[in-house]
Image (cartoon, rainbow, N blue to C red; front, side, top):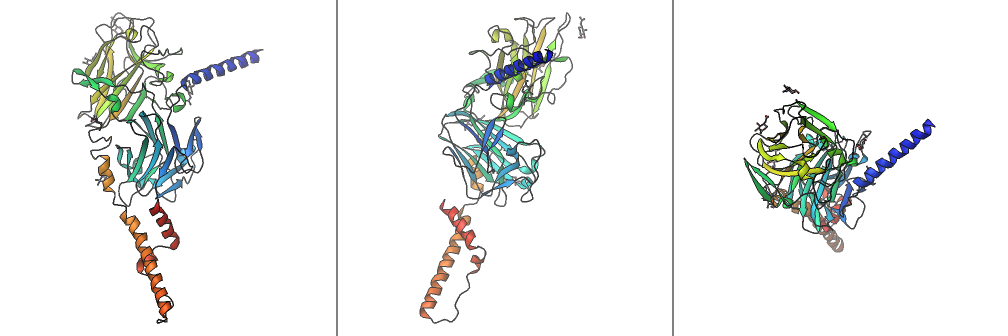
Length: 475
Ligand SMILES: *[C@@H]1O[C@H](CO)[C@@H](O)[C@H](O)[C@H]1NC(C)=O
Ligand SMILES: *[C@@H]1O[C@H](CO)[C@@H](O)[C@H](O)[C@H]1NC(C)=O
Ligand SMILES: *[C@@H]1O[C@H](CO)[C@@H](O)[C@H](O)[C@H]1NC(C)=O
Ligand SMILES: *[C@@H]1O[C@H](CO)[C@@H](O)[C@H](O)[C@H]1NC(C)=O
Ligand SMILES: *[C@@H]1O[C@H](CO)[C@@H](O)[C@H](O)[C@H]1NC(C)=O
């Protein structure tokens, strides 16, 4: 009987979990390209099929002459198959994707420096462009250590195609990538405006959704790491411990109930998943006095860029509505005074809410966010909390996320293709001339030498090679 009951309980548990994941998988993007680069077979990761880049698809293709695929020498157990192969590029090459749903798109590039006897991926040196956006300049595989690195970008796509171009930094360099994701973002992911924190002034920042972003930090506060499996947009959220300046006076709280997403208020599940909003870190007053502390998180950033700071809140800790008021600071400036989550969520507890701030990264090389009691805070209540924070680097005026050189300049650095075309052309010409010469001599029968030596150039190219290079030239 007991086992029967526990089995029933287990089935119920399974049903509930499935129901939960059913909710969280409700977003189905129009454009959804997952590419397994350099692999001959597709690979499934967390129920998502990454398609081999050598398979033909009408909607996406690799356009390049000088690439090859590389396989890992040793397979690491537990690491998804997509990290065991890579596509290597010896010359500028691009993946082209048809865009059926213009607007904001997410692009993820997966890099893993696996070991191979054929090539040391650590020696790679390259730039990556996404349409006209410079995503990476002078990126080197040598800086990749241990676990795979996933770079994530958000950009507005107005054209019918999205192109991801890999450009080796020099002729002797090469580029590589293990996997690519191109996904149309939900319409509400990036809105048109944000609060620009300009010293102590708060202004309106317009045209936010026409900027390009690189996700620098995505953090869940007070909780455990959230993996793509548990996120509606297949994102990863890291625990906040590494960024929290001091945990003194704060408490971690976990909420087992349902997060109440509302249609027209606050955050949707695509903005932040349940697993981010159901945990928090907070300041609480347990007696008649309000603690005189802030909770502060610090994120190292790059000077001379603007950053989008998205702070996620969900009052999962107050015992009733209307008790929580707190201040929000960005880079030490009061950015939101007396934030009242009850009013912001139409008076529903455990309902998610977020605020977007735009800030300049100054000489300190740090973007900091703080929450702390406000003049409206009350004793015997929760006095400040934060559930999650995202820090996204914004493109500069060169439309770059990595350096001052725009895409056209980076492409110009690459020597003209003429060298690659000329060599086989000269070889062909020489072959032709020699052939003509021989024919001519045979016809005349004036010379007794049956064969004439080919010019030096031709020795370097075997017939097979020149055929391959010629076919490259044609494409
Ligand atoms: C790339 O790095 C090299 C040195 O590592 C430097 O000489 C070169 O100028 C850099 N190129 C760009 C485009 O930043
Ligand atoms: C997904 O979330 C559930 C509930 O929080 C957790 O138990 C599970 O381990 C998570 N799964 C993965 C793959 O992260
Ligand atoms: C309230 O509690 C804090 C520690 O939690 C303590 O430092 C403070 O002195 C207390 N205040 C009063 C008025 O008892
Ligand atoms: C919290 O941080 C803000 C901004 O740095 C500061 O003005 C305020 O005095 C701090 N409050 C406490 C209690 O430290
Ligand atoms: C980002 O690029 C766009 C398009 O080039 C430009 O209008 C915008 O000003 C850039 N953003 C910043 C912060 O410079």
